[in-house]
Length: 607
Image (cartoon, rainbow, N blue to C red; front, side, top):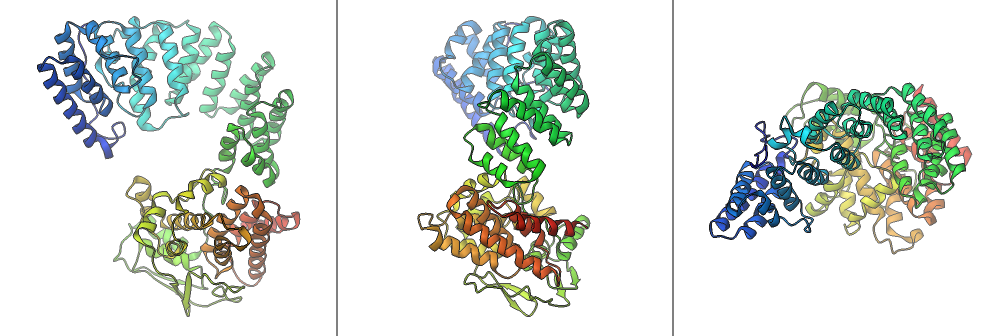
């Protein structure tokens, strides 16, 4: 095998997930240019300079076959791959240089070094085609690479990956998994290779192999690591009861591993048993009050049990890095905490039904008749998909949802009978694009949402008000296409929340009580009944989480808005009542009477 540089494997991908279609062509052109320059320099007798350009070519497009051909030419020019290695100095931590050294090491027959270095590079950009080379797929390579290198490679790569990886990463890293399989087959009793291979295979979705390898490792040598990997693999297979038994047995053997206590707690949460989960988290916390995960885990589980927002505020205010991860996990898919509020209007339901049957169209004339007036944003969402649609509301119920209960200066809707029209002009193109770039109907947590929207602090509030009723088009991305095709209502909600958070960042040097940002957000919260009320409420509550001195004021207004909605609901439907109740439940300092009222109202809505 030694002596010849290999090109990308025969099945080289020409597009799709690994090479990232959006940038593939540009990267390939740049790489081809670097190779061309390298060959000219080589012809002029300057191999050192040529090597630098080949490093750049590898960094720009690791899947370009011409680069490997040029590397072979370089090696031949200087007297072989061993001498060519001197031109790729590992003191320079550059991906192209390290990759070039790896490929020349392979050509020189230094297989351990070749695999080690190429894995180091691939771990930094796991979605790229670094491993898609013929020599890594050689039928005899596993016998030439030491188990120690395979262990180190598997563990390093696994430490750089989420669990599980996305499809594009799985495809890009499949050559390493194939090599690992061959190594395991040759070394079936290497306990460390088995459990380290298990953790990598699990991340790539090879769950059954991960289970088998970890179990075999434990049979060969009943190590703590093997037991942990068995549990992780079983958990990935959603075999929670089996994983729990393995981990509980191991916790008895090694009670000093408090991290395992946390894993057991998380597993019990997945099984829907938060009370038992709390027992394990509190055991870890009692054993070591300074443990970096014990306190955050306990706070997150307590919230799952009793819904008290104080536990989430403890996470938000914690300086422990794991607290943010725990807050993100508990916020996931929860209205207000991690995503836009649910929408229940007849108009919105009709939009969803229409999109199940046809694609959005400016020409399709959809006609909807609804018994009573609904929030104007629901009609706006319909018009995002079907601009020619007509909605007829047969009545305006009492109390009149078009009329704000309190006098407001900043209104974004005006009415002509039952027809709502924007009361503010469209935003500037620059402001619309600023919102468009970051808008989403999901966020990691309220503090993360607050922080991510600080980029809008310099946008004129008048422009942000304009985006509430003149939303920008969805972005030219896969996410944007999905929103436009299937959920324009969620896109609109995301835009409205983002714009309101932008307002929350306006002129933050102004004292809260007399600030313009407060004035605008309260007007939006208390304005005519609409999704905008909820978006403003989310902005206010996020501010209260991050800026404690605003909490009393925010609590008063958010609770007042919910109480007004509850009273109105005694006479008519209030589609935003549920979201307003969700807001109250995560507003700092809300008294028990009002949280109970919110829970009762939500319970009634669920009936």
